[in-house]
Length: 238
Image (cartoon, rainbow, N blue to C red; front, side, top):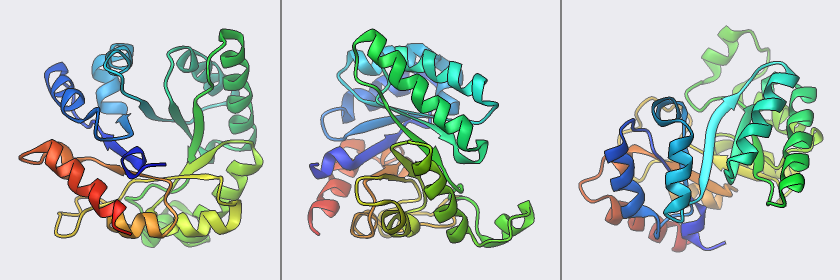
């Protein structure tokens, strides 16, 4: 992939005006737009239609986590919408993930379209070891990421969402073709916000990230286009 195809920009906004500005400014300089709960709750499937109409690709980040049938039926509906990537929560379990992938492939085949990449969230990048322990896990955050990554691969999914600090662990455990989508990426000198396990774009790619997700350092920049190109240039200079 070209460096720009590895960059996913998080559209963590909730107005149509903000979306239109960001999509039109960035669509030619990045690989994908991430639509999360905030924006999807605000605009629903209208946001998917709009981004697709502008030639953009979509990572729908809803972190689906429910009983297998509920997640499967939701994945079926979202596959029909034509998203390029979507995710579930690996902690929903093996059968939930397996059925979701099976349903996505079946739905896409029936429609004659390409199936979206289906990935699973491991441990949120806002959680450090202390928080993971409080939840009740008897493993560190890195150990849990590896454990859940292997479970995700066994269920037949295409990859995981993980911290860039754990992308290499996932690659070692699951192979180079297994996708790693890594939020928690900040250019040098940027505020880390609420992320705990972070690194820079260059180090993320060197460490095994297939895609990096960047939000505020681009969307809140004085010039969003320049900010995106700067990150792409950093990834190119490996």
